[in-house]
Length: 69
Image 1 (cartoon, rainbow, N blue to C red):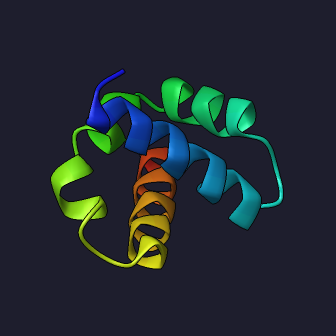
Image 2 (cartoon, rainbow, N blue to C red):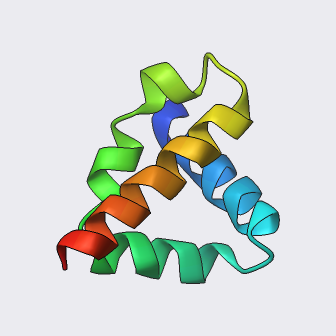
């Protein structure tokens, strides 16, 4: 498993805990909104800052994608 995939798995688990849900549900939501690859590709930024910043960014992406749909 690549370091990016390890971090993505960790991020999903932590974000799910923060949102009081499961990583499967978060991944499904990201997939439904076509955001999975975008979040995955944010590895360089997300792994070097506070995880709460990543959570805020993901929240923003989900909100924006939901408004557009």
